[in-house]
Amino acid sequence: MRDSARLARGVRLRRETFGAIAYVSERDHFYALDHAHVEALSAGGTPELAAAGICASDLPQRAFYGRSQFGSFPGGLPAVSLPLVVNCFATAHCPLRCTYCHADDLMAGYRDRDEEAWLGEVIRVARATPAMVGVVTGGEPLSRPGRAGRLIRALARDKAVVLDTSGAGDLGRLVPVLRECGVHVRISLDSADRAVNDRLRPINRRYLPLGASSHRSAWDAIGLARAEGLSCSVQTVVTGYNGTLPQLLALRDELVAAGVRTWTLHVVVPAGKAANRPPGLLAGDDAVTTLVDVVDDTATHGLPLDIRVTSTHRAPNSTLLISARGEVAVERGDGTGKDVMRVGRFAARTRMVRHFRRRVDPAGHAGRYLNGTLDLSSYRLRTGADQGKAWVHPATGVNGGLDRPSPGA
Image (tube, rainbow, N blue to C red; front, top):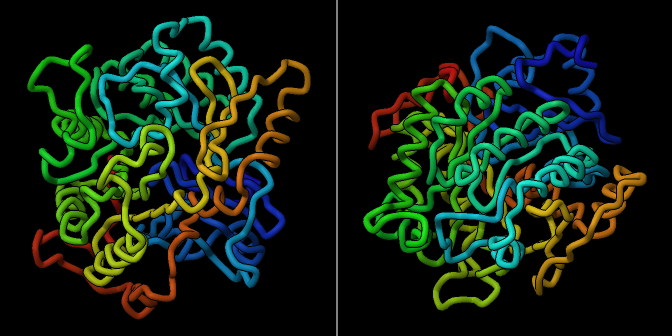
């Protein structure tokens, strides 16, 4: 299909019963296409698909505010039979002590025995997983940059690759392999307020000196990625400490001003450390409504920022993990912990598909990456008549019109 579809550089396309899934690496954004749009793409694409960065075109790209579907899906958000994303641990070590760490229970027993030999097993199981995207995570991949580089090269043979990092480490050391493999860098930042961010993501004094800041590390990583022309985005975990509308809009405006063009917001999941429900940490029942308001405001002002929102707290078993030791792990649907399983060498791909279909919530998995958790009917999204207008945000003065994002966007 790639020969006839005129896909843009770094785009991956996978056929599905409803049409296809497209992944745009530059924007770290999945899109569902119905059959009509797949045919249109095969015929050379449309201005709408070009605006999403899916097809090769001289037409400008624009922001997509919570939207990830092209066409008609009368049955609702399409389910997928194979994983979209697999998260692969390069290490169980991390220089931070995030208060909500989703994977703390998957790393606690591994840190003191984090062996180099384990990486080969991680690579084997990841290669057997038919996902479109492989995320290099941890722990903190930058705490073991050699392993992270090996894992990136292995995953890049048949997947798009995302580096999931706090920025706490030597990102510069990985720049050559990131550029070589076309890796998207996703940086964790939870608040425009350094004190709030560092309260949610405190440093581990065993690894970082007094005065180090996760807020500063994240911004340094954003600056380096932008300076090096790497595609990058920011992800934010929304909690009771940082989840008000003014707090989120303040962070959004800083990201736009810095040239970040994709922002992913996750409602905190009561799993890992957050399973203990520390006072005030979990977001309230109105969290998703607040996120809809964030998207709505961003669309109203036409800011050049893709937004993807997840509410995985509604379906904890929506992500597929490979531990630092090469086991497959999935959070249980009731949020009581993770099922961790070894994957034998015989028929490993079949085993991985079986684990995915038996243990991962298919609607939750699709919704996590296709914005299925949002009520699109409430958006004041730009219509076709709006798309020729230039927008200037009143607070930042940033032009949110139809200019194509820069190479580092």
